Length: 496
Image (cartoon, rainbow, N blue to C red; front, side, top):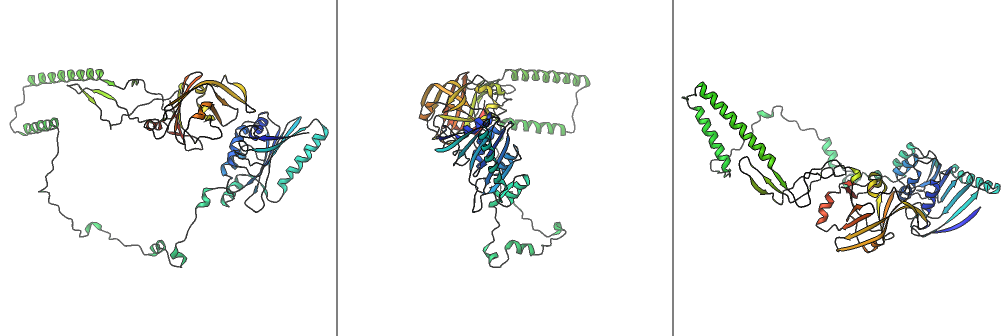
């Protein structure tokens, strides 16, 4: 048996990486004795629980402040062996022990930290790593006896096996966090004094009987004299002429003595009218074919943007577009007013061709000022954008990551700062919930929550990154393109 004491400090030698490495090696069994199991800690290790054959045991403490229904339901999707103890009482279950058993060895990690994001990643923390050699008879016997003692914990009064019905009961009894526990029925002061509430009095009042025949009631209808009111309406000249012509036609047909043309003259007139209509139709078609739409330089309106699937369901962009309109007889150039919006039509996005990723930023992480995180499911959605198939294994702060070296150009649009980094990286770890753009130049770029970042892929290993402050005029345009919401976050993103 080997015993080591390890120091965790800001993503170095973390408990989270130790758990991840053990689960990646497909342990036969894994035991988690966690007194304070927070959802942020569960989200970190959940990525490593997917599609593994390890037999899992969870013995956890719950409370109404931090334990969520979604976390408990999530645990049941990976194993039936979940036991809980209510920490809402005076006595609490306090523990943080993780054990991973293999054929020839077993690892035990004992820590005083909570199972939270900071507790297993960034906090300054000491934890103990114990390695048992199961080939050795004494080590094997000692390991089995300790596991047996730990599993006796679930036999103590107060521990229960978790299932879906128990989760519903915990919510009803307000043993775990639920928004329902904040809905209260508060009595009014009059009700506390024994008086009936207005609603109750209204309920006890007999219904008002209405007359069966409402139309027969004598209702005086006010009259309005419109004789002195004049209404001025501006009617375009064309409509006036058309109205006059229509009136003339009506008058002509109302006259009593109308001489109809002879049959031959009538046939000739009909043919002439048909020829004239055909000619006008051809002229209109030719005019429509000749119509052109003049757009600002760099925009080809014949090639609609591939942005509909993002992700941009219907993007209404305000553009200054000059159109050349052609009426039936006279062609005139007309400039659309500035306050008139043009609809930029879009078609289905080909995710393999995405070259722009746009999203709202969280507050800058003071513990990782040199990094920008992107959720892992975005990488799965547009793998060609990141191009991580050729990423190589690289050790960073004691942990093995997949890393791709890139050239990164960073622009702070607000402060007019432009920085180039030839040694930037895109890194990720299997089963991790995010990938990271890492650049030391990001230390010099300041941004705030909900500022927008545009990441543009210029070539296979060259990227452009632009930070757009939310107080800038340009922000309004790019925020319209962010209409999809990240999972478990109110921040939005888009692609094009």
